[in-house]
Amino acid sequence: MKAWVALFKKDFKLTRTVFFVGLVINLLIVMLTLYMGMKSDHTLLIFLPLVVAIVLHILYFPIMVFISLKIEANQLHLWLHNPRPASSLLISKLVNGLVMLVISLLMLYVMSGLLIIPKFNLIEAYWTDTWKSGLFIFPHILL
Image (cartoon, rainbow, N blue to C red; front, side):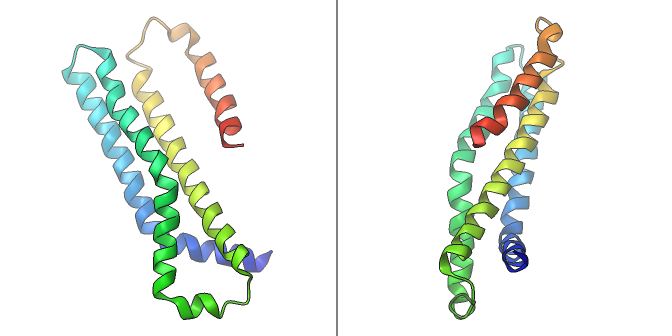
């Protein structure tokens, strides 16, 4: 298990730049949402950048795995001389991409929730129910 954790850390170090760039893009999308919310009278327009961000997250997992495999392809001699089985190496990359996807989606979910709370006074009494149901549904989607 200790070797697999080290392998997971190595995969995270290979893709952390792309991961942090993705988090910055999430922050920029939330800032765009905030700007559109201030400039626009129509509350539906604040959802457009968030929908674009969620659609981009569909491509997030394959891109992270591809980048990790591409970086490993440049160091193929290390990949081939690793004593771990190939399935363990690939599972480490897949789990790493999945963890990064969950963290990115969770960050986007929290920031968008913080933006939406002040906009909708009509559902404010029920907002805690929405957060609870969102936190209940999110792990089930992953499973």
